[in-house]
Each structure stands twice: as structure tokens, then as C-alpha cells.
Length: 105
Image 1 (cartoon, helix red, strand yellow):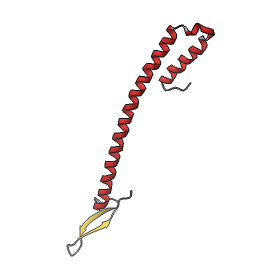
Image 2 (cartoon, helix red, strand yellow):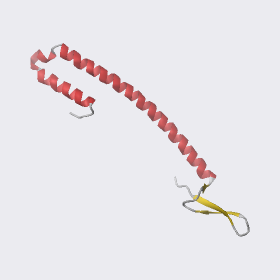
Image 3 (tube, rainbow, N blue to C red):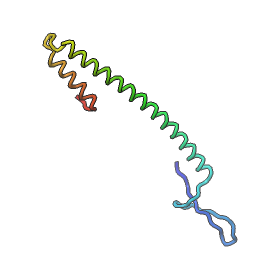
Image 4 (cartoon, helix red, strand yellow):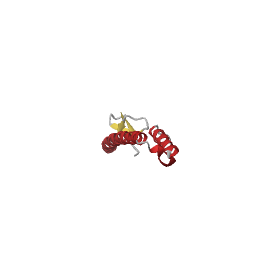
């Protein structure tokens, strides 16, 4: 949105005048109202996004906890001894731990 700025002054007949000036301290009410509406809209959007992030953070924590529990159960169950799957299980656990740190396997 482009907002024009103005400076206000009195002319030689002491009548109030204004002229466009990029450093002016004044804006038209319509522009101000539009900016105010845009700020309100952006604040609502920010609030929704923050709520969504909090939801995803909670989901992420639950998924990490569930993944850790699954990895621990797999180790305890001795699955790594079944059918020579030791390397596959170790690779999966390494990939899980790397993913938790934000690394891609």
C-alpha cells in the first residue's frame, strides 16, 4: 500500500495549506484508516500463526517422545538379533536421532 505524506503550513494569507512531501508528518485519514485496518489484520494473522505453532510444538514433542519410546522398546525386544537385522535397526535408530536434531539422513 502506498501512503502519501504531507507537510502542512500557512500560506501568505494565513490559510492552511498542505503539499505532498515524502518526509511529511501528515497523512490523509483514509490512508491512516487503511493502515490501521491492515495492522489489525496482520495482528490477527500473527495470533493465529502463533497458536498454530504452539499446537505443532506440542505435537512435535509428543511424536518425539513416542519415537523415543518405540526406539527403546525395539532395543529391549532384541529385534536386532532377529534375522540379522542388527544393521537395519541401528541405521533406523541413527536416522531417528539425526532427524530429531534436524538433520536429514
